[in-house]
Each structure stands twice: as C-alpha cells, then as structure tokens.
Length: 297
Image (cartoon, rainbow, N blue to C red):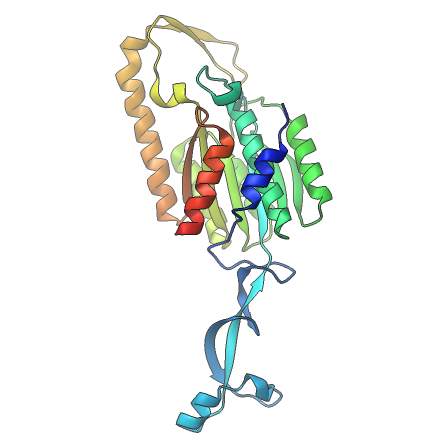
C-alpha cells in the first residue's frame, strides 16, 4: 500500500498549515518570526536612530508628538518542522477495527509522510526522526523536494521493533534540533506519563511549538473483547497471558482513561497541542479534520 497516495496530497495541499508560535527559519515565508524587520504585520515602535531609513518613520507620531519613531514589523519566515515517529514494538499492533487494516505504525507513517509533503509543498522545511529506545535515524529539516522522497523511503524501510523509550529519547532529540521550530510527535506514548511530559517540556523550553498525535487502536482505547483472549507482548518479551476480558475490563479502562487524562492535561500545561487519533478513523480524514480545525481557530 502506498504511503503517500496522490489523492491524499491533493486534499491536504488545499488546506495548508500555519504555525501558531514564532518560527526561526532561514528564508522568508508565511510564519511569524521572532525577529523584527520590514514586513506586513505591525509589531511596535522604537526611537529613531541615525542611519534608519526615513521611509520607516511614523509620520503620524511625528505630527502629534513631534518625536521621531520607527515602525517595526514582524518578519515572516519559513517553518522548520521535525516529525518524530515512534517505531517501537507496540506500534506494530494491528487492531481488527483499523481502517484499511493499518497497524498503528502504518497509520503513523502515513500521517508523517502527508505532513512532510504539506510542509515542503508550502516551502517550509521538514525533517524526520524515527525512534524506539533511542534515535534510529535523523533526517534534518530541508525544503528541497527530494526531501519528500528521502522521508518516504525512510518511513517505508522502518519496521517497528524493540521496547518503548519515548521519554528518554525526547531529551536526546531536543538537544539535536535547532530551537524555535515545530515538533510533531506521532506515537502511542506507551511509557511513563510523567517522564513523557518531562521530555515534552524539554521541547517547550527550547521554544518549539509542540503537537502530539496520540495514535491508539480502537481495541486499546475501548477494550471491546468479549471472549477469552490470549494477549502477547509486542516489545521484545516472548511472553503471553490468557485473559478473561470481563474480569479486567473495568480496571483496564480506568487505567487507560487516567493515562489519557494525564497526558492531555500535561500537554495543556506546556501549551502543546494534543490530537488523539484512533486507527479506526481513516488517517487522511483525521489529518484533514485536524488541519481544518487548526486554521479555524
């Protein structure tokens, strides 16, 4: 199955993506920059200094207050987006309710490929990190069209394996990438929630805008099992247990809901966007809904 089908790219390209925070990129573009220059959106005044262009003088202020002030504007810049895709063993789970029969990893890499295409299409830069207990591969953000091919090839070649090490890996990645960009995490976040939030805080501390795409299978979220089941660990432990679903459903759902609530509230506390994704919903539908809602806010 193609990771980046043309029908998906055509639909998302019509929506576009606009950063909410101020981005620091190398070329001019559509996103607000932390720098001040001469652009479209007014930012503030500053006193005139010798060498400033008279064209930047605010003549209204001069007429009213007889003082020389320069109008400053927010520069626009391109966005540096880094996509973090969880390739740990748990991402290989393929629920029976999943749209198109996709595993969580299949779902995640299609979301990542579509977003990478969108960023580069609008002349922003996109990079990719695949990880499990450590960083597997890192493609630094680039704007060239060949970057889409490189990202798609990396996602195609990557297979989920090993245990989750989400939290510790976030700290490593945060130190590798340049500050003041966009970090998009696509993961089931199966790790200690306090440590995960601590890792996400590291990105926020480096002035990144952070978006969490929390990918779960419908079975993980709602535990619909009725009959006796055998459950197997997907993260390297050759162990399976036989379970009567009715005996553990209430406690399971209690713990899952507590986990989700803690992650969502924690994301809110660091001003990270939290986007729950259920593999039961087609990935392109979920992504387009997210982009449309973002633009409407």
